[in-house]
Length: 205
Image 1 (cartoon, rainbow, N blue to C red):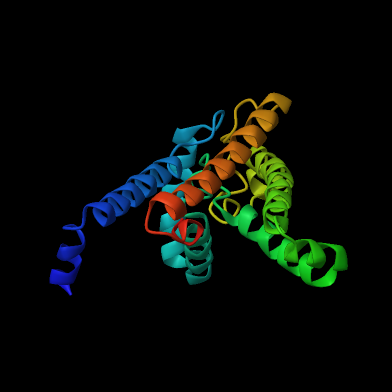
Image 2 (image 1 turned 135 degrees about the horizontal axis):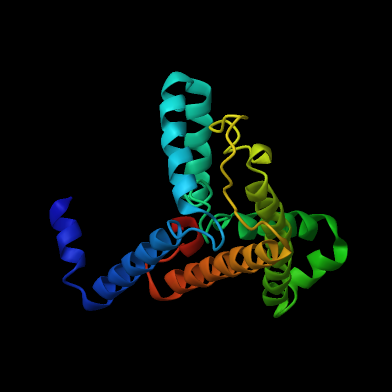
């Protein structure tokens, strides 16, 4: 098995695709660790440290935190620019697949020449709508961490530290823009991995 893996690097095109895919994945991991503008990183790190200690005492909290971390790639827990990950696009894809099966006009469109491209375009539009909505909800939950299902389990109600010192409308708008841009960037990277990498870009992300 090791020799087979080594032989793949002897093929120039395959080696280039593997290295390109690895480079994209490294960039994605970096984006999952960059905190959103306006979020106090020191407070976040202290809360996460306290959360680890509490999780050791509460198996339910530990399991929920681990599950959310897996689905967001750590971005949601870190309040990162890739906090939503690729999930809005996957949700939009599922919605379009269901609508194609239920709505006759969409089903007909998917069978026409060039119809699949239009379906993909509609999917991207729905992704943007989902990103704006989920980004707004995330921004509001960061302003009031007690309403954040991930943070409220690790924060004492008596804790007066603010995760977002200036939680006005400007923070909400910036967060929505950054979150949406982050997900669209992940979509683009997924397409690049599919075309120039080893394939199945969205699944790899």
